Figure 1 (cartoon, helix red, strand yellow):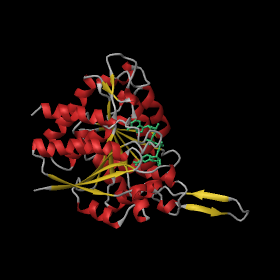
Figure 2 (spheres, rainbow, N blue to C red; figure 1 turned 30 degrees about the horizontal axis):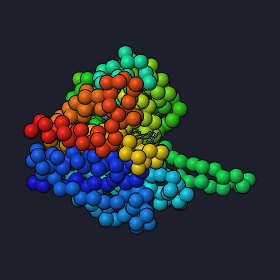
Figure 3 (cartoon, helix red, strand yellow; figure 1 turned 120 degrees about the horizontal axis):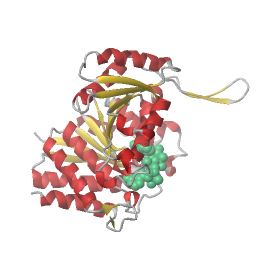
Length: 363
Ligand code: NAD
């Protein structure tokens, strides 16, 4: 049966990188028999400009109807002066919440060809393969009450609430343990249980869930130590499971282990593996419109979509190996280029074309 994929390009470099990922999807459609129908929608600043809101009802309906969503990125300086409630980023938080996309899977995989692109020594990062499982629809980004209030003395006070219930913790823990069973069978749960009661409960529930997964070993780590360990000895980790905000921060940190934020894809899944797929980076306004953004994180997000939501494991492998091939061939966008003269500097569009060419050559 034909599956529907919603294409939400968003802002900044979003349209440029999504164009390249769509080229890959269309190649799979035309040449590899992938039975999908692509439907475009507006989100973020692009949606605000046309409709006044960051997540118009048509886009939400498209998201609900679709089997999977491919998203570029949202946000940019143009929309920063707007009221917080109608800023582009609110559209993203809203679609994640409305679709119940509670499990954010962020692999940090170092392609051997990029070992020198990391700021860390190659021996520290070579062979790195971590999966960060971030809770996405709870915690401090959603907790209420929240806001900025005026105190009796006239000063303003900003406040947010970090809240997790047992069911929310249990379901994300299960995603982490299920993933670890298919990998190296290690879960490290990251919290701040020494200071925050909500993560004291987090630790207790994760420990309880672990009993259902006897083949997986569980460890716990405070977030400050985890940040240090990720830089000191990242290869000690297999699956990391953590809260919304800690996961947000640690996965950006992990991106640098792999060379560039432009290489890292992500999947945000609901309880039935319907998902939204997006690079972990933002809209990069500093390089938008210059045809120099790295589209590989978005193309690798297509691979995750094929694997998790479209049930096309073989095509997912093909896309990932095509990405590896273009890196082997020495093609580099500026973010991953070193001064090795065997490398060729390419544009966003040329990188997308190269991946498509490798895929076509496999026919
Ligand atoms: P960012 O991820 O957009 O950019 C950080 C740095 O990484 C920049 O120097 C940028 O040029 C570079 N970079 C990012 N993606 C790249 C790519 N594919 N290729 C090459 N270089 C790349 O983060 P930021 O600058 O903090 O945020 C910019 C805007 O994006 C803000 O409005 C922010 O709210 C938004 N944002 C959106 C998302 C999302 O849509 N999921 C995530 C994070 C930030």
